[in-house]
Amino acid sequence: MIHNKKNPAVFLDRDGTINLDKGYFYRPEEFEFEPGSIEAIRLLNQAGYKVYVISNQAGIALGHFSEAQVDALHQWLAAKLNEQGVRIDGFYYCPHHAKLGQGEYKKECDCRKPAPGLLLKAAQERQIDLGASYMVGDHNSDVEAGRAAGVKPIFVRTGHGAQEEALVAQDIPKAANLYEAVTKYILA
Image (cartoon, rainbow, N blue to C red; front, side, top):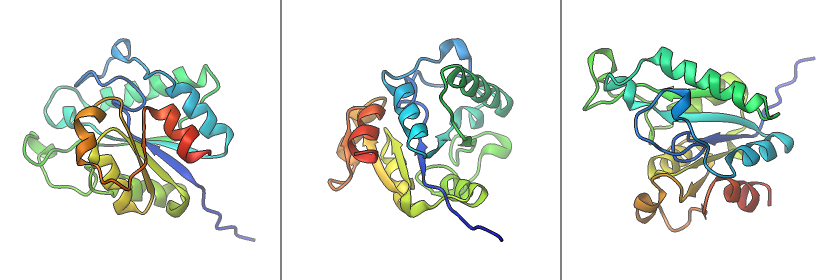
């Protein structure tokens, strides 16, 4: 018997949502968690949500670091969280930038948020029920990518949130940080 069960997921922006946004970086020693983000992901794990990082990584397109360096940072992050019994189920990122990119990375794509390509790719690869899922981030582009993919977007005021909040539609739930987004809007 074949089961076609789809999983609810929470898609998380990385910089400014899970960790402090320090501009373009790839070194683990520069990584610093947003307060409450580890516990927020733990609560999502315990509630049965799959958790995926959905991130624009224009630093690749600009030549600041390579895809291999981003992959290494994500492996380090997954291991760091696993040490605390916390799980991220996958990482998806866009290495492109249509205007400022260099070489093969200078192109229009369907994966750079606000386009929904990364969420749709994850949904297809991981059997995700988009209608039962969420996108949490500190940019209006996170909100728009979530809307375009058919998930419920939640805006957080960490990272670029203070500068971006005026751009976010009134009907979008807003939270102080990832922990509040999870406890107030996803698990409430």
